Image (tube, rainbow, N blue to C red; front, top):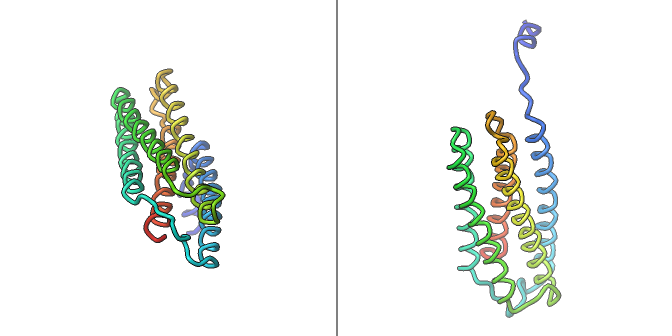
Amino acid sequence: MQAEAATGSQTRRAPPVLFGVIVFLASELLLFGGLFAAYFGLRSETSPWPPGGVRLDVVLGALGTALLLVSSVTFHVGAKAAERGRPGAFRAWIGVTMALGVAFLGVELYDWLTLDFSVSTHAYGTMYYTMTGIHWLHVAAGLVLMLVVLGRLSQGAYRDGNLDGVHAAAYYWHFVDGVWVALFLTLFVLR
């Protein structure tokens, strides 16, 4: 009976690009996990945390969070349009996603320019700028990835229905958005 079950079942394998992105995101999870561990380690050993005089603009942080959460929705809607064979709608939704991502980067830059502490002021400043800065770079990389997807779309890469590259970019974007939610909760809410 077991032999029949084994021969009757088929093993489904992830396409190589999706498998590669999943492995890459696992390594990114380790990177951000290390940053969170350092943050909470310093927090447990430093009193007060954050140091006196540190004021973060929670409304600005919430705005950035909203921008990224909406951008995950727009990317998802765009990917669904691609699955339905609607390249124009796909292009438009990815464009909206990119605009939201650029707006997020602008919000973060404004935040950095208006903070009353720097990366070298204290351990909190070091962790704040490191965590948000590395995340900022990941958002920028996601925008470049979307440009690649749009470039491939213009070359007809997805006409055959193979959307593995689109889904890989979506996995990355949703991961980056999820990391920001964790950063927002840690830096702006828990403090």
